[in-house]
Figure 1: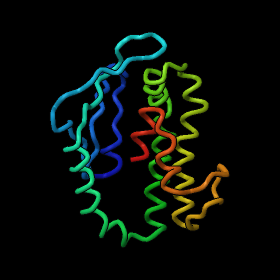
Figure 2 (figure 1 turned 120 degrees about the vertical axis):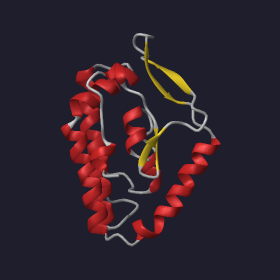
Figure 3 (figure 1 turned 90 degrees about the vertical axis):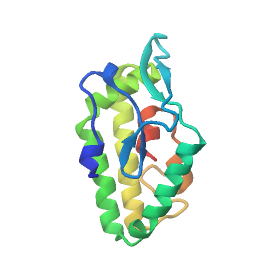
Figure 4 (figure 1 turned 60 degrees about the horizontal axis):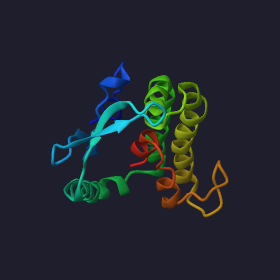
Length: 165
């Protein structure tokens, strides 16, 4: 599946249904159960999110292990191109993603658009640079270590969590 077909955003935020992205495709949780997401600013129900469990994690780990041989033989430049393409898509869809972020975090759409969207696409560009230039403990665009911890450290929103896994 191409990155373009994986990156679909509904026109209406209320039509959003988050799914797990495993082995190159969107899939429901193995239990087929979803939880309600609530806008913390209004208390209103937003959109369903997967109620995933250990089986979903096991599926994702198996898929990652199966993908590793091919991904590990991909050149750093090709990996960076993929990461930069994701950043470009985030920038292209920033208005829609900001609306989703607003629902998830209870912040204004303008705040999400001006601060969160550039930050999120910036993470992908940072990681693309790190792939090409090498990972160090002190070198990155944001003066933070470019390590796996920095990939998983910003999971405070649906957008950031989904774009970093």
